[in-house]
Length: 466
Image 1: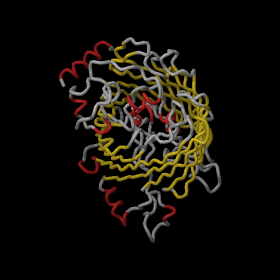
Image 2: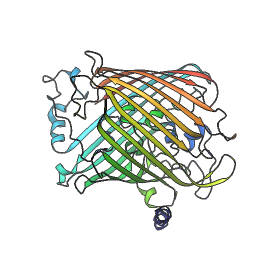
Image 3: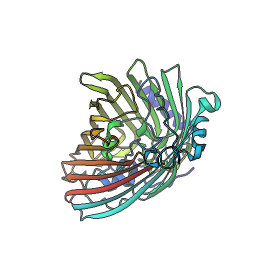
Image 4: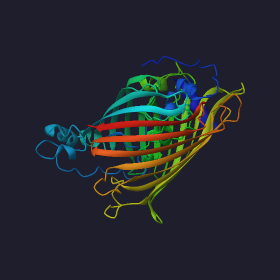
């Protein structure tokens, strides 16, 4: 433990549970990640990035004042409100759920099921079915124990999300819940508190880093993993391998924020499945002495000309592990940069722009990422998209979107042979009820990075919030 924290101190000065290893040991570098199969084996999180859109999984605050919960509507129970109007399929449990929330305990759950098929191209076609069950609890410690502005979050996930139809030949994953195999784990367990009024927020514990960094709220409806976070972030500790870490965010003035975090980086070089571990790997170097370090600064604007709810952000990351380059050399650490922007370009006339919980309208977003292409197969990535909801009379909860992503690969001949890969996604999210959504999704991959013909992939996703 002392040796690990000594390495942190050295890094700061210079720069101003058990899991089964699937990689090499601490003293041996690994080869650069050259294709999606290597990425899924060495860095499971690169093959799927789950945006923090599941019920209860709100992303980290980007405003200096924590947003209040939306006002409660009529009780969601039989004889009081029609089931078709319930926001959660299990309702308020005949009042028990309402009582728990009043006591500071908020339960949320969701089930995501998905069928996918490679309609044409790729490596020969194929289909698969996958699912992910997520159950989480938020404890408001201000209500429970009079600890001001503090909370605890616990998240359990289980699912069989086998790759199956990942025969599209693309580097970018067309499903953000698909991983190689299945999981049953306590994915997150963290403590968060605000200090000095609204100036400082600290979150400590096992955290999905994509809930704090590189996320784009308006891209949450897409299922292409690149929309969750740029694939240029090589070693992101996110689903299915969140990791123990310390997150610190400052809010120096209205609209501005800056954050940084230190995570256990064992999942990349040393192949430790951090998603199934507690804090032991962070506090001890028995399995790994690698770290993942990330920072982001951003600014939000209520209005920007004809736009509203605008946000721009830039970030950078560094992994301290020893990597073997594609050329056979060795690098002590690797890193990259990313940037993003999003804004609402149109909203329904009846919408209150000051209500942060009403996201109806036309949203536009951009993302960019770059990495060291002597280690990473992805040299840079550019994504842009648009999503629209509330535009069809009587279908306020429906949404549709289009997302285009270009991945530019490393020039090293030992990496992916393709120069670049394009992917285009189109979806329509049908709100059968507020708690049940059905989403037909179509994706087109041009010049797939792992070979094969251009591919067309169709998916049907059903999400139930309960």
